[in-house]
Length: 245
Image (cartoon, rainbow, N blue to C red):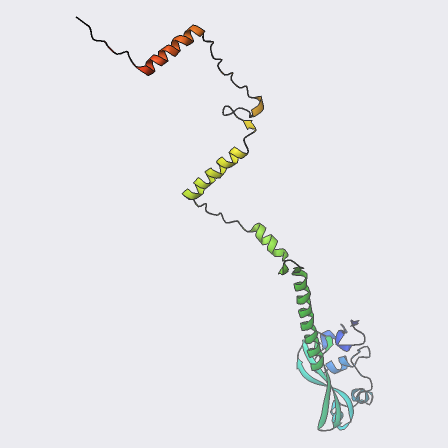
């Protein structure tokens, strides 16, 4: 079974044959790797020639071309196979490495692919960070630039508000306020008056004014006596005359 993710790139595919998994070991892993359905296997390699001629793998050292060797084994879970170009019995050039984990074959990425993937991941993260930062940026001609975070509003709502201590007012503030209130009362007299506590306020126009007392009529004779009494009081008592004997 071969699961293709990116058909043009061998780094994105894997291959497994479940019938071989129970018998995988150092002697059978190369035969498992040389299955015809394995996309990682090159049928023009020297291993295929040795297999067709029924020779041992020791004859690979005497040949020139592409070959596969077992580089590392950790039975029964991990095997590493290397693809290399043999130029002489003592000189080879590695081409690719493949690792088999629990019977599933993967191609090991090369250094260029690893660096390229890490750089793309870093660039993607930086670009995402800039896009998110730009979504919180606000601008207005009168205010300029500022930041508007959604979490900040939720924190302010959930954050308990600290109670401010009420400071007592000074004498100047109390007297000044009383003077201002008196001035406003004179400029803008009240339109409603509450005559008694607990009663409904009544407009000033509907309040009945008490009639002023009418001055009593004074008779003319009484007026003259009042005037004489006032003039006498002003002149003082009459002088006493000496009695003649």
